[in-house]
Length: 628
Image 1 (tube, rainbow, N blue to C red):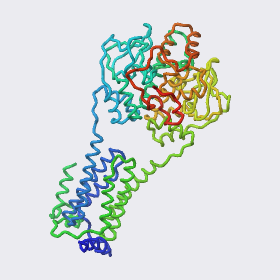
Image 2: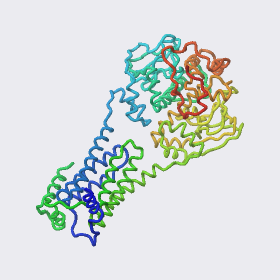
Image 3: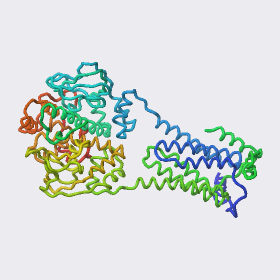
Image 4: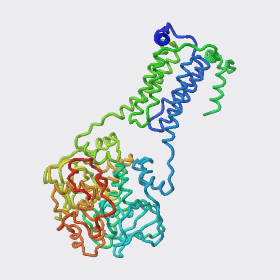
């Protein structure tokens, strides 16, 4: 046995003479057909579709090379290697095709995915988890989804078809249209361990269908899938902002007063010829076509084997081993394509060495040089895309808390913050915007460092903290209008640093980046909702306010149901404004509504899952009170 192993290694390493010159003639025509397939395969791109393309053409190439090895060169090792690579490629094709299989949903869920989840780049696998735990419910015309003061808040629902009318004390507030949440304010006003009762009535104006998630099942889903929790947080936040803006139209028309900062703007809503070519050149019959003269050296070599050749040099086997390793790398590895291209490049380089030193075949050298160039170009491109993006310290914090949770790529964030924006500073007591003076058309800003104070006609409204938009309400309110002025005064309470975009250039950039446009839309909606919640108790000190910002629920800062009632109030302008600005400020901001109570059936979920969206776990978060 030892002597046989020694003979094998001697054959692999020393049993082949180096080339003294190129051999006459060319390899068989089937080999060149295989090389064409391999060239097409190496030109494939990234992703699952690109991987399917690569393996499909590589499999065709390995099949042709196996035929070439069996009928032409009579080399058992070449046939064995290429047949093994063919099997691996076939397995990868099946695996990738299974991953790309179409996940079928009923029509309502398919339309919902296209309207809300697909623009945010949510994979179908994630979306399937969301719709698995919900049910579609029908609601006939004039039937009530919820009745004021009677219906308990037990679920979160999203309208799929029809129209819902919202009223309080018999007075109309607003409509709910398809792909809007029915009870997002009530959902956001309760902690997971609390129960509550609707303070509005929701009535179907037409036959309606809605998707409903039970509260407990949805909270458990949030605890298991952090991305889904972050997704619902921004969806609900934007939905609440949209509802409040729709209330503004009704208030401005019927009550005759402007609702401070957020509502002072005008808002408007394979081929037969290939097979015949392969058969014609896989036989020993000479070609009868006009190009038989220069094809003679190729077709004359395709003869059936009588004697199999000895095993090839070790370099050949190492090259094939690299190909096998590259094809076997799991697609779940993040740098799968980089490793695949690297192993392919090493294999092609070794084939070049084998062709020059031992096979003495110029055409094999040329083909593998082309393969090496293609793989190296793809490898360099993939490495460039994976390069680390250098960001300033403040921008890294901003990316981690706002954009990374929504899976915005670092290079896209770098383009967003590196082309048409600047980092500006503002000293303490300097003004960012003056009421009725500063235009809202010029910029959109995000606070990076420090604290700003917002006031309206001498009334303190709220503070702005880092990684929050400074003028998101104005940006939202004047997207279709020009020439508006700030209706609030924004002053630096500390030395501040903020990121400022040119509004015109930002709008143009977002129009060319549809994914980022959707992300901005939801981030601004969420930011507006957070600002509204922070209005409840202006007497809070900064330390308490920061703790409240990190609480899992926002209900301790402002009841959205109270806001709905305030909006529908029949009081005069100043009384209504004063009631909203100072309502509940004499009591603690964590005083519970009489319509809420601790649930005896639902245990508190210990993980911060509801509203801790823009910040990773930090020691400060541990200071927030438990939900129990």
